[in-house]
Image (cartoon, rainbow, N blue to C red; front, side):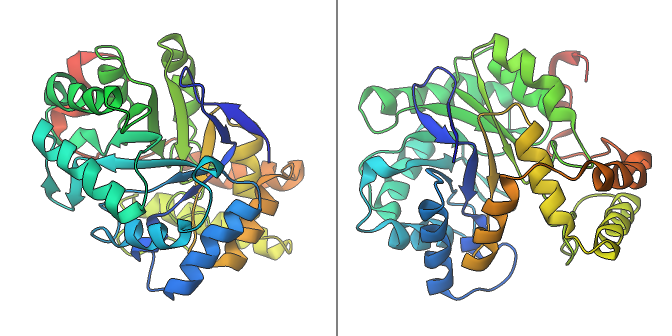
Amino acid sequence: MNRRVLGKTGLEISVVGYGASPLGAVYGVFREQDGIDAVHTALDGGVNFIDVSPYYGATTAETVLGKALRGIARAGYVLASKVGRYGDAEFDFSAEGVTRSVHESLARLGTNYLDLVQCHDIEFVDLDQVIDETLPALRALQQAGTVRAVGVTGYPLPALAYVAERAEIDTVMSYCQYTLQDRRLAAWRDRFDELGVAVINASPLGMGALTTRGAPAWHPAAPEVLERCAAAAAACAARGSDIAELALAFSVSTGPFASTVIGSADPANVRASLDWAQQTPDPNLLREVEQILAPVRDRGWVNGRPENQRPGGGAL
């Protein structure tokens, strides 16, 4: 598994990361041992970057991940968690709240430091609070040796840029925006790079939309987008292929990002995903799928506060 340096942090992370949200049953129930085995499969496959959050399964994902990492040398993985979001409508980006949250995550994960702590889904709160209160609190934890790097996550790219241009951060992470259907994250990569901010891409399968099973019922994309994704999956199946294979190969092989994060609580799925992620996409199948998805290319959704979709009035 190839590795890249995570911006200016000095941390070397695998180009494919393991996203632990499925360990919180975000995509359905699972056997805990399967989830633990999925983490071990990722590590055995060369993955060293692991991303989690207390929000996933109301701390369940962190708890299961902590069990999976027990007994594994701490230097063998780069561990990222998040602060600020704890439920669908539960947020606390106060200095006191995020400081407490980091220490609670450390206890669940069984470690005395986190390599990366990210402010989770900042578009739902006052961005200036993130800049003026949350990030300074995390930098204080960094000075104490509890945190090695600090970043922000979210869906609207202008909100991430607003914070990156006004505060010192090490990383940004966004999701569903460098996929077969939506490639807007790549257009923002140079902007973040100029600021010395590393970019992490998550959900290259579009939160399940670019899979044979299809999007979960809670998926926020418009029906037309999901219908086109389903048609693309059917076209791949007709040619004896799985759209997830094409989607992963495309995102990892062409995405100019520090890492692309994928996740599953099924070790067999992790094994297959790691194999697919290191392949070159079939150009003929890619062309066919791109034609199917062309009418909905780069179509996303509104997430978070209206004022955070384009804070400061900057260009989208």
